[in-house]
Length: 281
Image 1 (cartoon, rainbow, N blue to C red):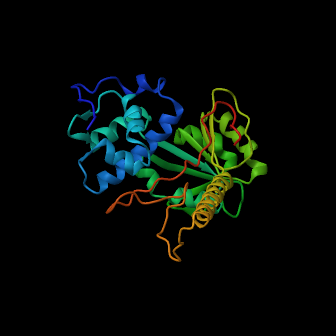
Image 2: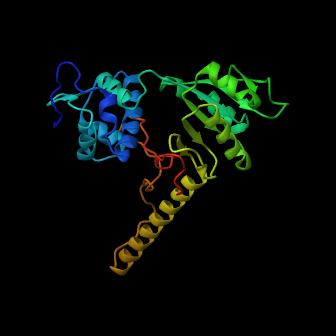
Image 3: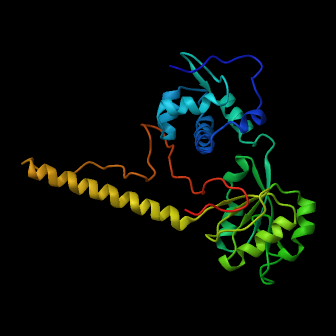
């Protein structure tokens, strides 16, 4: 094992470390956090770097380098304390105190997101949902009453959310973004493929599901091409081809790592971090 020895006192705070962590490492820390949450639910107390790396779908060397940004965390020859490492990553990712989330757009996607129970257990609490449709306003969605988006400013002041989610039609996305910024929101997650304009002080991330599926399509096509080429090479070399082949994990698609575990690795659905605008794919 190559884990570092843990030091008393916990070391440098997550706030002090945030500015020094590369964005790619931050994305992987989120993956490690998800894996650690699954391990904790399964009652696992200690995990080695190799086990955590396999479950997260990364190399053990890359994992150890990522975790080195957090300071000493593990014990050489023993492994990482699941609960302590989970708390450490949550601190660095700014999740220790939790987040209050509002959502604009009470359509099918918005309702599904509000009803997703996984958010709360990861530190994100839905506190408000808004829409402009009179037939929708006043309805109850997963325990929340749909509010009129016209009252957004007053509601933001009352609910004190830290993150806003946009799930409206593309044509309305920029106007909703403008309203959220005017109401004081500085962190916005948009499910619209439209590039949103906002001040440099506003953090915007975009989830484009079509782009993610296109990436999966590309990986599948590349994998199929490699498989066909390998088959052709085998035939050219005079090797026999079996009619039945063992199941194979398609590159880029979720898979189960190791016997007896159900931890899956998937592509991140969000675009790279940006300030004031969304980075196009």
